[in-house]
Amino acid sequence: MATAMVIGTQWGDEGKGKIVDYLAQQADVVIRSQGGNNAGHTVVANNQSFALRLLPSGILFSDKTCIIGSGVVVNPKVLLEEIDGMAAKGVQISKLEISTRAHIVMPYHIRIDEEDEKQRGTNKIGTTKNGIGPCYADKVNRIGIRVGDLMNEEIFREKLKTNLALKNRLFKTYYECEGFDYNEVLHTYMSYAERLRQYVKDTTYSANLYINQGKKVLFEGAQATMLDLDHGTYPFVTSSNPTAGGACVGAGVGPRRMENIVGVVKAYTTRVGAGPFPAEQDNEVGEYLRQTGHEFGTVTGRSRRCGWFDAAVVRYAAMLNSLDYLAVTRLDILDGLEKINICTGYRCKGEVLEEYPESLTVLEQVEPIYEELPGWKTGISACRTYADLPENARKYVERISELVGVPLGIISVGPDREQTIVLRRIF
Ligand code: GDP
Ligand code: IMO
Ligand code: MG
Image (cartoon, rainbow, N blue to C red; front, side, top):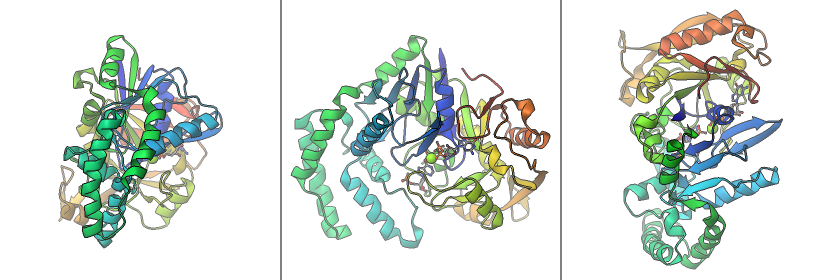
């Protein structure tokens, strides 16, 4: 048995795509188990950049099987565009499997997402407006439409009719906006169905079969721990469980089969969308990180909020995900800084907090405790071994590892596959 899992430890965009692509070199199978096209995973290989949203980040290797598991919400239009976009770049998609159990994002989910955000006004979550939350809501409400339903025209017609009757009433009377035409949606989705049919199967069985056959299986997380529906900064979260437990559910693989859980940690912190962010630097430091790191969303192009590395967040993520290793990414973005701060924890009303606060009211009041470390003031993107890194860069990542209580596994010093320092072989 050889499995590994890649999990985001902060608020997303840690560089999971890059780490999955790197580890996929040794894997046979890569599985996405939650989220949808709210994710944006950029992978750089052979001087080409690929922005992936639904396709697992192992897709650049034509010999790897890539699975979109039952816990993913699939927008078929986006997925087909992605498949076509990859083909245009010379990447042929053949070994793709899409779970019959995955739910389908419908046009009304996207409109509800947009309308709900409008109605929330100043309390808006800052969603990606891709209909992710409303799609998961229908899943939980047991009225969702699944990939398996899409493959059967009769069932799809029936479910679409029921859903549209309900949603169109909602659009008319509650949101006071346009609804959708049954025939138009039916026709469009039937054309998607024909193109996707070749990939559709019960991936729960294939995932387990591959593990039983001794294949190396890599689980790719989307979003991140602090965006977890149960354990993140609710309600400023996404609508799935990006934590390690969510990967078991969304892939249909039992927890005893999960080994080598890798937490991807950006060397500083970013967040896109609203919600608490104690170590945020709404100042020249934040601006330095945003500009140097090109911190603008892959999906929405929104400017990402930036701040110092927050050990309280990643310690919490280490506990929730039972992390085995850290993969520290984007260390090179800190190259130009004279001094670097690490947030070691929070103080609230004079007391140092032992636990990550569940309450947003408390989170709004906390004061981050900072420790200052010297920068290294030199380019590290060409470093290929741990010994190549300047001493202060090594001290920085070692301090992160110490504060979080998880050993270092990988250090990433640039977006390219080659710009990766491996301290421990994961598979
Ligand atoms: P994900 O959503 O976690 O996969 O992360 P994103 O792809 O949204 O954002 C991470 C960005 O950082 C992408 O543009 C990556 O190509 C890039 N990246 C990943 N690792 C590194 C690194 O070590 N250094 C630099 N400079 N860029 C990196
Ligand atoms: P990757 O996989 C960063 C954020 C949104 C918003 C909240 C809810 O690239 O790391 P949603 O559309 O999911 O209902 O939005 O979650 N969010 C992400 N932030 N990276 C992501 O994915 C995200 N996916 C969702 O900005 O705050
Ligand atoms: Mg991203």
